[in-house]
Image (tube, one colour):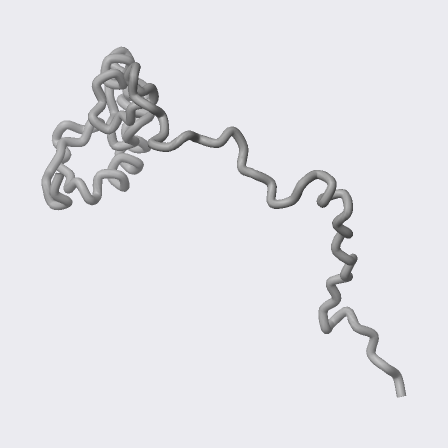
Length: 117
């Protein structure tokens, strides 16, 4: 949708808002219309979608911004086999033999003692 296209505000039908300004308008209009706000629900896929609470389930099932959470049967999840866990760069024995890094106290210039003359 074009950023300059006009859409109708779900809180006040007399408001026509540019798509690019809709998120800002929705926040302000929601605060100014608490009665209407209680009757509307926000789509989990697109926060710009405000629908009556009774229609939310129907909207969620048909929302154009919905990403497929489940793949159809027969479609592989990955193009290549997915590893169960990333391989460790070191073996467990090598990890035990590796010395821990030395402790270094983080001292800033202001923490250093000033010599007295």
